[in-house]
Length: 227
Image (cartoon, rainbow, N blue to C red; front, side, top):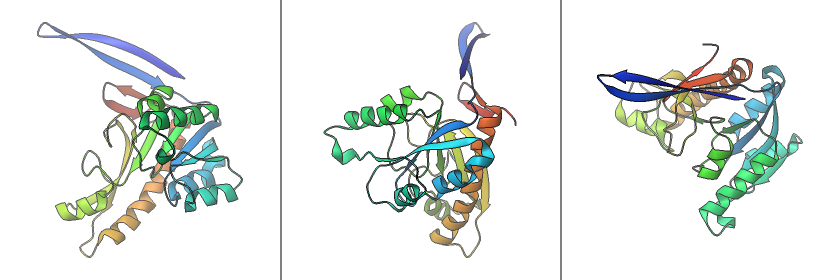
């Protein structure tokens, strides 16, 4: 469920509006998960589903024969492959993906290692109800190589971020973050492995709080309602 409030303010004679929106989910919440590879984040959600008030109703991959898709099928989950290459245009892919997600009855869409930007049809079908998990402390180090960028920059803390998806690449409002220290001996693989462990826990915890408490936004800033 979505509630919206728009407040008007005046600063030095200028009028501006701040949009306040609040979302809540039914329990159990129906969740669709988008993957591209092994699906370790998806597996964590499926394994913890009974404990956090969700039912994973669909797993969608953007390519066939992925390890994550095979695992989901072994669990008896509904799956679908929606590959961009199967469509004449990106907009057709976007429309088809939106239809697949809507037909699943999903209340929440989780992009978990899904290596495609979602289009306008999908975003419009699930406003404020699509989250993504990224392996850096956003807004730093966007894109697919966050840990490598963190090492190159010499930062002392890396981590992971769960955010509400918008039309940009890793630009949505941040819901939660977890920090992972960068060790002197780290290379990309060792740092990524530790981030993945923290990332899986954070994703499960964040979805659990979204189900139990809801979430809200004030302009560009997002919060879990129980924090």
